[in-house]
Image (tube, rainbow, N blue to C red; front, side, top):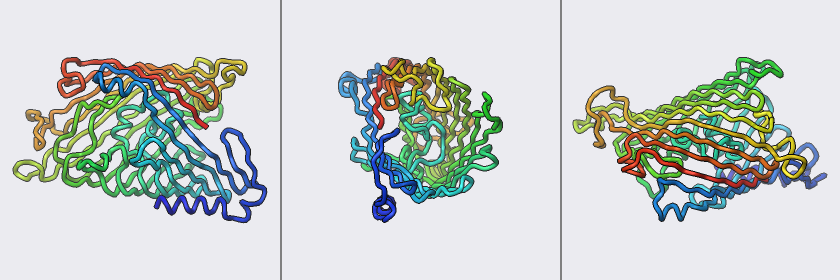
Length: 414
Protein backbone atom coordinates (compact mmCIF):
# COMPACT_ATOMS: atom_id res chain seq x y z
CA UNK A 1 0.00 0.00 0.00
CA UNK A 2 2.83 2.41 0.89
CA UNK A 3 4.51 2.09 -2.52
CA UNK A 4 1.22 2.44 -4.33
CA UNK A 5 0.35 5.65 -2.48
CA UNK A 6 3.79 7.16 -3.11
CA UNK A 7 3.49 6.33 -6.82
CA UNK A 8 0.01 7.88 -6.98
CA UNK A 9 1.09 11.07 -5.24
CA UNK A 10 4.27 11.58 -7.27
CA UNK A 11 2.58 10.59 -10.51
CA UNK A 12 -0.33 12.98 -10.09
CA UNK A 13 1.95 15.76 -8.91
CA UNK A 14 4.52 15.69 -11.69
CA UNK A 15 3.10 13.89 -14.73
CA UNK A 16 0.07 16.08 -15.37
CA UNK A 17 0.29 18.70 -18.12
CA UNK A 18 -1.33 21.14 -15.71
CA UNK A 19 1.52 20.66 -13.25
CA UNK A 20 4.07 21.44 -15.95
CA UNK A 21 2.44 24.80 -16.61
CA UNK A 22 3.59 27.76 -14.53
CA UNK A 23 5.78 25.56 -12.30
CA UNK A 24 7.66 27.83 -9.91
CA UNK A 25 9.70 27.59 -6.73
CA UNK A 26 8.76 29.70 -3.70
CA UNK A 27 9.91 29.84 -0.09
CA UNK A 28 7.17 30.83 2.31
CA UNK A 29 6.86 28.82 5.49
CA UNK A 30 8.62 25.95 3.67
CA UNK A 31 10.52 25.45 0.40
CA UNK A 32 7.77 24.72 -2.10
CA UNK A 33 6.96 24.00 -5.74
CA UNK A 34 3.74 25.52 -7.10
CA UNK A 35 1.79 25.13 -10.33
CA UNK A 36 -0.94 27.73 -10.28
CA UNK A 37 -3.70 26.81 -7.85
CA UNK A 38 -3.64 23.18 -8.96
CA UNK A 39 -0.54 21.88 -7.22
CA UNK A 40 1.48 22.55 -4.06
CA UNK A 41 4.52 20.47 -3.05
CA UNK A 42 6.08 21.54 0.26
CA UNK A 43 9.48 20.12 1.14
CA UNK A 44 9.86 19.36 4.84
CA UNK A 45 12.81 18.45 7.04
CA UNK A 46 13.16 18.07 10.78
CA UNK A 47 16.32 17.55 12.82
CA UNK A 48 16.38 17.10 16.59
CA UNK A 49 19.37 16.54 18.83
CA UNK A 50 19.14 15.79 22.57
CA UNK A 51 21.67 16.21 25.35
CA UNK A 52 20.43 14.13 28.26
CA UNK A 53 21.50 12.73 31.60
CA UNK A 54 19.64 10.59 34.13
CA UNK A 55 20.35 8.96 37.47
CA UNK A 56 18.47 5.93 36.11
CA UNK A 57 21.05 5.25 33.39
CA UNK A 58 24.15 3.19 34.05
CA UNK A 59 27.56 4.80 33.53
CA UNK A 60 27.88 3.07 30.15
CA UNK A 61 24.35 4.00 29.08
CA UNK A 62 24.77 7.55 30.33
CA UNK A 63 27.90 8.02 28.22
CA UNK A 64 26.13 6.57 25.17
CA UNK A 65 22.99 8.64 25.70
CA UNK A 66 24.64 11.98 26.51
CA UNK A 67 24.09 13.10 22.90
CA UNK A 68 21.23 11.54 20.99
CA UNK A 69 20.08 12.52 17.49
CA UNK A 70 16.38 12.04 18.19
CA UNK A 71 15.02 12.64 14.69
CA UNK A 72 16.24 13.21 11.15
CA UNK A 73 13.15 13.30 8.97
CA UNK A 74 12.56 14.49 5.44
CA UNK A 75 9.41 14.49 3.38
CA UNK A 76 6.91 16.25 1.18
CA UNK A 77 3.35 17.33 1.76
CA UNK A 78 0.84 19.43 -0.07
CA UNK A 79 -2.34 19.52 -2.10
CA UNK A 80 -3.45 18.94 -5.69
CA UNK A 81 -6.64 19.10 -7.75
CA UNK A 82 -8.26 21.33 -5.11
CA UNK A 83 -9.34 18.55 -2.78
CA UNK A 84 -6.53 15.98 -2.41
CA UNK A 85 -4.01 16.36 0.41
CA UNK A 86 -0.99 14.12 0.84
CA UNK A 87 2.06 13.56 3.01
CA UNK A 88 5.16 11.37 2.67
CA UNK A 89 7.68 11.37 5.53
CA UNK A 90 10.83 9.29 5.95
CA UNK A 91 13.08 8.82 8.99
CA UNK A 92 16.78 8.82 8.05
CA UNK A 93 17.98 7.65 11.43
CA UNK A 94 16.50 4.17 11.85
CA UNK A 95 16.52 1.07 9.68
CA UNK A 96 13.34 -0.38 11.24
CA UNK A 97 10.05 1.28 10.26
CA UNK A 98 11.68 4.28 8.56
CA UNK A 99 8.47 5.31 6.76
CA UNK A 100 6.42 7.57 9.01
CA UNK A 101 3.29 9.24 7.61
CA UNK A 102 2.48 8.13 4.05
CA UNK A 103 -1.11 8.94 3.15
CA UNK A 104 -3.56 10.47 0.69
CA UNK A 105 -6.58 12.42 1.90
CA UNK A 106 -9.72 13.26 -0.05
CA UNK A 107 -10.91 16.52 1.49
CA UNK A 108 -13.50 18.09 -0.79
CA UNK A 109 -16.06 18.38 2.01
CA UNK A 110 -15.42 19.48 5.60
CA UNK A 111 -18.10 17.13 6.91
CA UNK A 112 -16.80 14.00 5.18
CA UNK A 113 -13.21 13.23 4.26
CA UNK A 114 -11.35 9.97 3.58
CA UNK A 115 -7.72 9.23 4.40
CA UNK A 116 -5.82 6.10 3.32
CA UNK A 117 -2.24 4.99 3.90
CA UNK A 118 -0.03 4.94 6.97
CA UNK A 119 -0.69 7.50 9.70
CA UNK A 120 -1.51 7.78 13.38
CA UNK A 121 -4.69 6.18 14.60
CA UNK A 122 -7.18 8.80 15.88
CA UNK A 123 -6.52 8.21 19.55
CA UNK A 124 -5.01 10.68 22.12
CA UNK A 125 -4.48 14.40 21.53
CA UNK A 126 -0.95 14.14 22.94
CA UNK A 127 0.05 11.29 20.62
CA UNK A 128 -1.46 13.05 17.58
CA UNK A 129 0.27 16.38 18.26
CA UNK A 130 3.27 16.86 15.97
CA UNK A 131 6.62 16.54 17.75
CA UNK A 132 7.46 20.08 16.60
CA UNK A 133 4.48 21.43 18.56
CA UNK A 134 4.83 19.50 21.82
CA UNK A 135 5.00 21.44 25.08
CA UNK A 136 7.56 18.91 26.37
CA UNK A 137 10.50 17.09 24.85
CA UNK A 138 8.86 13.70 25.39
CA UNK A 139 5.21 12.83 25.08
CA UNK A 140 3.47 11.66 28.22
CA UNK A 141 4.35 8.09 29.28
CA UNK A 142 0.69 7.23 28.76
CA UNK A 143 0.61 8.46 25.16
CA UNK A 144 3.93 6.86 24.21
CA UNK A 145 3.07 3.46 25.70
CA UNK A 146 -0.72 3.08 25.55
CA UNK A 147 -1.91 5.13 22.55
CA UNK A 148 -1.72 3.11 19.30
CA UNK A 149 0.59 5.26 17.17
CA UNK A 150 0.96 4.77 13.39
CA UNK A 151 -0.50 2.00 11.27
CA UNK A 152 -1.76 1.32 7.74
CA UNK A 153 -5.48 1.75 7.26
CA UNK A 154 -8.44 3.79 6.05
CA UNK A 155 -10.26 6.48 8.02
CA UNK A 156 -13.26 8.75 7.52
CA UNK A 157 -13.29 12.05 9.37
CA UNK A 158 -14.84 15.49 9.39
CA UNK A 159 -16.40 18.37 11.30
CA UNK A 160 -20.13 19.03 11.55
CA UNK A 161 -22.55 21.48 13.20
CA UNK A 162 -20.30 24.50 12.59
CA UNK A 163 -17.29 22.60 13.91
CA UNK A 164 -18.94 21.89 17.25
CA UNK A 165 -18.43 18.16 16.62
CA UNK A 166 -15.47 16.45 15.01
CA UNK A 167 -15.30 12.74 14.32
CA UNK A 168 -12.74 10.17 13.13
CA UNK A 169 -13.34 6.46 12.54
CA UNK A 170 -11.30 3.85 10.74
CA UNK A 171 -10.07 0.32 10.23
CA UNK A 172 -6.35 -0.49 10.47
CA UNK A 173 -4.17 -3.51 9.80
CA UNK A 174 -2.82 -3.64 13.38
CA UNK A 175 -3.21 -1.61 16.57
CA UNK A 176 -0.27 0.74 15.98
CA UNK A 177 3.51 0.70 16.26
CA UNK A 178 3.61 1.99 19.86
CA UNK A 179 2.45 -1.42 21.04
CA UNK A 180 4.42 -3.43 18.49
CA UNK A 181 7.77 -5.01 19.44
CA UNK A 182 10.92 -5.00 17.29
CA UNK A 183 10.93 -7.60 14.54
CA UNK A 184 13.25 -9.88 16.53
CA UNK A 185 10.82 -10.06 19.47
CA UNK A 186 8.24 -12.81 20.01
CA UNK A 187 5.86 -10.61 21.99
CA UNK A 188 2.30 -10.35 20.67
CA UNK A 189 0.28 -7.34 19.53
CA UNK A 190 -3.13 -6.59 18.11
CA UNK A 191 -4.37 -7.56 14.66
CA UNK A 192 -7.06 -5.80 12.66
CA UNK A 193 -8.18 -2.77 14.66
CA UNK A 194 -11.28 -0.57 14.59
CA UNK A 195 -11.11 2.87 16.19
CA UNK A 196 -13.38 5.88 16.65
CA UNK A 197 -12.87 9.30 18.20
CA UNK A 198 -15.30 12.18 18.80
CA UNK A 199 -14.30 15.74 19.72
CA UNK A 200 -16.85 18.18 21.17
CA UNK A 201 -16.35 21.96 21.35
CA UNK A 202 -19.47 23.14 23.21
CA UNK A 203 -18.64 26.85 23.33
CA UNK A 204 -18.05 27.89 19.71
CA UNK A 205 -18.33 31.61 20.46
CA UNK A 206 -16.08 33.69 18.18
CA UNK A 207 -13.34 35.69 19.95
CA UNK A 208 -14.25 34.33 23.38
CA UNK A 209 -11.84 32.80 25.89
CA UNK A 210 -13.83 29.56 25.93
CA UNK A 211 -14.09 29.17 22.15
CA UNK A 212 -11.15 26.74 22.06
CA UNK A 213 -12.30 24.47 24.92
CA UNK A 214 -12.79 20.88 23.78
CA UNK A 215 -13.40 17.43 25.21
CA UNK A 216 -13.11 14.11 23.47
CA UNK A 217 -13.56 10.38 23.80
CA UNK A 218 -11.97 7.56 21.80
CA UNK A 219 -12.33 3.78 21.61
CA UNK A 220 -10.43 1.04 19.80
CA UNK A 221 -10.78 -2.73 19.66
CA UNK A 222 -8.64 -5.56 18.38
CA UNK A 223 -7.70 -9.17 19.13
CA UNK A 224 -4.36 -10.21 20.63
CA UNK A 225 -3.10 -13.79 20.09
CA UNK A 226 -1.74 -15.95 22.89
CA UNK A 227 1.59 -14.77 24.29
CA UNK A 228 3.33 -12.07 26.30
CA UNK A 229 2.04 -8.59 25.29
CA UNK A 230 4.29 -5.91 23.80
CA UNK A 231 2.71 -3.23 26.03
CA UNK A 232 5.38 -2.63 28.68
CA UNK A 233 6.32 0.01 31.23
CA UNK A 234 9.28 2.26 30.48
CA UNK A 235 10.53 5.44 32.14
CA UNK A 236 10.97 8.72 30.26
CA UNK A 237 14.48 7.85 29.06
CA UNK A 238 13.78 4.17 28.42
CA UNK A 239 14.73 1.95 31.42
CA UNK A 240 12.01 -0.56 32.32
CA UNK A 241 9.82 -0.74 35.41
CA UNK A 242 7.28 -3.37 34.24
CA UNK A 243 7.88 -6.06 31.60
CA UNK A 244 4.36 -7.52 31.18
CA UNK A 245 5.63 -11.10 31.48
CA UNK A 246 2.16 -12.65 31.67
CA UNK A 247 -0.01 -14.61 29.28
CA UNK A 248 -2.79 -12.87 27.37
CA UNK A 249 -5.23 -14.09 24.73
CA UNK A 250 -8.39 -12.43 23.46
CA UNK A 251 -9.88 -8.99 23.04
CA UNK A 252 -7.91 -5.77 23.58
CA UNK A 253 -9.99 -2.68 24.33
CA UNK A 254 -8.72 0.89 24.58
CA UNK A 255 -10.70 3.76 26.06
CA UNK A 256 -9.49 7.34 26.11
CA UNK A 257 -10.80 10.63 27.48
CA UNK A 258 -9.25 14.02 26.77
CA UNK A 259 -9.80 17.71 27.51
CA UNK A 260 -7.95 20.81 26.34
CA UNK A 261 -8.38 24.56 26.83
CA UNK A 262 -6.10 27.24 25.39
CA UNK A 263 -7.23 30.72 26.51
CA UNK A 264 -4.79 33.36 25.30
CA UNK A 265 -1.17 32.48 26.20
CA UNK A 266 -2.27 29.67 28.54
CA UNK A 267 -2.81 25.98 27.78
CA UNK A 268 -4.39 23.35 30.05
CA UNK A 269 -4.59 19.74 28.91
CA UNK A 270 -5.45 16.37 30.44
CA UNK A 271 -5.99 12.78 29.29
CA UNK A 272 -6.78 9.32 30.59
CA UNK A 273 -6.25 6.03 28.73
CA UNK A 274 -7.25 2.54 29.83
CA UNK A 275 -6.19 -0.65 28.00
CA UNK A 276 -7.39 -4.16 28.88
CA UNK A 277 -6.21 -7.46 27.37
CA UNK A 278 -8.30 -10.57 27.95
CA UNK A 279 -6.55 -13.69 29.24
CA UNK A 280 -8.89 -16.39 28.01
CA UNK A 281 -7.90 -19.92 29.01
CA UNK A 282 -4.62 -18.80 30.56
CA UNK A 283 -4.89 -20.21 34.09
CA UNK A 284 -3.11 -23.44 35.06
CA UNK A 285 -6.55 -25.12 34.78
CA UNK A 286 -7.11 -23.57 31.30
CA UNK A 287 -9.82 -21.26 32.66
CA UNK A 288 -10.06 -17.52 32.10
CA UNK A 289 -8.07 -15.03 34.18
CA UNK A 290 -8.83 -11.43 35.00
CA UNK A 291 -7.79 -9.03 32.24
CA UNK A 292 -4.36 -7.47 32.05
CA UNK A 293 -4.76 -3.75 32.78
CA UNK A 294 -2.61 -0.80 31.71
CA UNK A 295 -3.74 2.73 32.41
CA UNK A 296 -2.37 6.23 32.65
CA UNK A 297 -3.24 9.89 32.99
CA UNK A 298 -1.64 13.30 32.98
CA UNK A 299 -2.45 16.94 33.68
CA UNK A 300 -0.32 19.61 32.03
CA UNK A 301 -0.22 23.35 31.67
CA UNK A 302 1.84 25.95 29.85
CA UNK A 303 2.17 29.72 29.72
CA UNK A 304 3.65 31.82 26.91
CA UNK A 305 5.60 34.47 28.81
CA UNK A 306 6.00 36.58 25.67
CA UNK A 307 2.24 36.74 25.13
CA UNK A 308 1.61 34.67 21.98
CA UNK A 309 -1.79 33.03 21.58
CA UNK A 310 -1.37 29.34 22.36
CA UNK A 311 -4.17 28.24 20.01
CA UNK A 312 -2.32 29.90 17.10
CA UNK A 313 0.91 28.09 17.93
CA UNK A 314 4.20 29.55 19.08
CA UNK A 315 6.33 28.46 16.13
CA UNK A 316 5.98 31.91 14.55
CA UNK A 317 6.93 34.37 17.33
CA UNK A 318 5.58 37.91 17.13
CA UNK A 319 9.11 39.23 17.64
CA UNK A 320 11.65 36.66 16.36
CA UNK A 321 15.10 36.41 17.91
CA UNK A 322 17.54 39.04 16.54
CA UNK A 323 14.68 40.65 14.64
CA UNK A 324 13.40 43.01 17.28
CA UNK A 325 12.75 40.50 20.06
CA UNK A 326 13.68 37.35 21.94
CA UNK A 327 11.34 35.01 20.12
CA UNK A 328 8.62 33.19 22.05
CA UNK A 329 9.33 31.84 25.53
CA UNK A 330 7.04 29.33 27.24
CA UNK A 331 6.99 27.70 30.67
CA UNK A 332 5.37 24.27 31.09
CA UNK A 333 4.64 21.68 33.79
CA UNK A 334 3.14 18.18 33.70
CA UNK A 335 2.10 15.66 36.35
CA UNK A 336 1.45 12.09 35.16
CA UNK A 337 1.15 8.43 36.12
CA UNK A 338 1.48 5.18 34.17
CA UNK A 339 0.58 1.88 35.85
CA UNK A 340 0.25 -1.82 35.02
CA UNK A 341 -1.58 -4.67 36.76
CA UNK A 342 -4.84 -6.60 36.34
CA UNK A 343 -8.54 -6.07 36.86
CA UNK A 344 -8.70 -8.68 39.67
CA UNK A 345 -10.35 -7.06 42.67
CA UNK A 346 -9.08 -9.53 45.27
CA UNK A 347 -6.53 -12.26 45.83
CA UNK A 348 -2.85 -12.23 46.56
CA UNK A 349 -0.92 -10.49 43.80
CA UNK A 350 1.86 -12.44 42.13
CA UNK A 351 4.48 -12.09 39.40
CA UNK A 352 3.56 -15.50 38.00
CA UNK A 353 2.70 -15.29 34.27
CA UNK A 354 -0.58 -17.14 35.00
CA UNK A 355 -1.58 -15.28 38.17
CA UNK A 356 -5.13 -13.94 38.35
CA UNK A 357 -4.09 -10.93 40.44
CA UNK A 358 -0.99 -9.48 38.79
CA UNK A 359 1.62 -7.76 40.93
CA UNK A 360 1.81 -4.52 39.03
CA UNK A 361 3.96 -1.43 39.14
CA UNK A 362 3.65 2.28 38.36
CA UNK A 363 5.70 5.32 37.46
CA UNK A 364 4.72 8.80 38.68
CA UNK A 365 6.52 11.67 36.96
CA UNK A 366 6.68 15.45 37.23
CA UNK A 367 8.17 17.38 34.32
CA UNK A 368 9.14 21.07 34.38
CA UNK A 369 10.05 22.66 31.08
CA UNK A 370 11.13 25.82 29.26
CA UNK A 371 10.56 26.22 25.51
CA UNK A 372 12.31 28.88 23.45
CA UNK A 373 11.04 29.44 19.90
CA UNK A 374 13.75 31.61 18.34
CA UNK A 375 11.94 31.88 15.01
CA UNK A 376 9.77 29.69 12.78
CA UNK A 377 12.64 27.24 12.21
CA UNK A 378 14.57 26.91 15.48
CA UNK A 379 13.29 25.70 18.86
CA UNK A 380 15.23 24.92 22.06
CA UNK A 381 13.65 22.97 24.94
CA UNK A 382 14.90 22.12 28.42
CA UNK A 383 13.15 19.60 30.70
CA UNK A 384 13.76 18.56 34.28
CA UNK A 385 12.02 15.25 35.11
CA UNK A 386 11.43 13.67 38.52
CA UNK A 387 10.18 10.06 38.45
CA UNK A 388 9.07 7.80 41.27
CA UNK A 389 8.70 4.02 40.86
CA UNK A 390 6.14 2.33 43.13
CA UNK A 391 8.19 -0.89 43.36
CA UNK A 392 11.81 0.18 42.79
CA UNK A 393 13.06 -3.43 42.93
CA UNK A 394 11.73 -3.84 39.37
CA UNK A 395 12.86 -0.42 38.20
CA UNK A 396 16.19 0.95 36.99
CA UNK A 397 17.41 1.71 40.56
CA UNK A 398 16.35 -1.17 42.88
CA UNK A 399 17.55 0.65 46.01
CA UNK A 400 16.12 4.05 45.07
CA UNK A 401 12.45 5.03 44.71
CA UNK A 402 12.91 8.33 42.89
CA UNK A 403 15.41 9.78 40.45
CA UNK A 404 16.06 12.84 38.31
CA UNK A 405 16.59 13.21 34.55
CA UNK A 406 17.63 16.28 32.55
CA UNK A 407 17.16 16.76 28.81
CA UNK A 408 18.07 19.60 26.45
CA UNK A 409 16.78 19.50 22.86
CA UNK A 410 17.77 21.50 19.80
CA UNK A 411 15.29 21.42 16.91
CA UNK A 412 15.51 22.68 13.34
CA UNK A 413 12.39 22.46 11.16
CA UNK A 414 12.03 23.49 7.53
